[in-house]
Image (tube, rainbow, N blue to C red; front, side, top):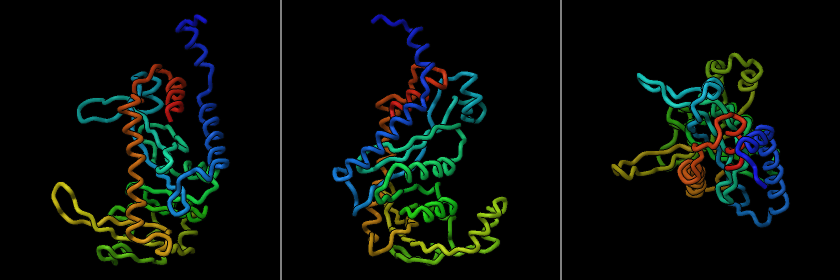
Length: 278
C-alpha cells in the first residue's frame, strides 16, 4: 500500500496518545497478575524506583507555551519538558509514565505514580527514591497504602532524628510533628491536623561510604519503613543500589534510542512517540 507522508500524518493526528498509555497499563497489569511466578523479586518484593528527567522538545510556540523553556544565564535555552517513570528495577519494566511541563513538581508526579502503582501491582512492593523526593506527605501516602519504601535523605531533612545516629548506626523512631514543624502545610488544614495527631514509626540508617575521587568518608542517610528483621543495614545498602537502574533507563532512552529526536513537532505526535518508547 502506498501511503503519502501527508496521509500518514493525518492518521496519526487522529490517534489519541493516551490510548497507548492505557493499553500498556492493561498489558503490564496482565503480566504482573498472570506471570507472577516468573518475576524476579528481592526477599519477596518487587523493587521499583521513581525518578524524573528533563528532555528537549521541538522548538515551537505551542510547545513553548505548554512545557516551558530552560532558563540560561543571559540567553533563552531550549524548550523542555519533564518525564517521570516508575521502573521495576529487577525485571526492567517501565510501569507508569508521566509527562509534564519543565518545572512540574516531581513530588506531584510521584503522588500520581503511587496511585497507579497501587492499581497495577498486587505484589508486595518496595519503592526507592533519591534525596530530592523527601516529603512527609508522600511518606504518609505510602504508609496509608501499606507500601514499603526506601528514601535517601538530604542532610537538611528530619535532622532532629538523623543527628542522633552515628555512622553505620540503625535506629527506629516514633516520629511526631508539632505546630511549628507542620507550618509548611498550614494551607492544608486537614493534613496539618492529621500530622499533629499521628505517630509515624520510621527507621533511620546511616550508611558509611567513600568518595572514590577523593577517598573522603561520608554518610548517606536512608529513611524506610522496612524493619531490621526484614532487611539488615547491608541488605538496605544493596536494595538502594538497585535504584541506579532507573538512571540507566534514562541514559538508554536519550543516548541509544534517541528519545529527543522526535519525528513530529505537534504535542500529540510527541506523546505518541514517548509512550511507544516507555
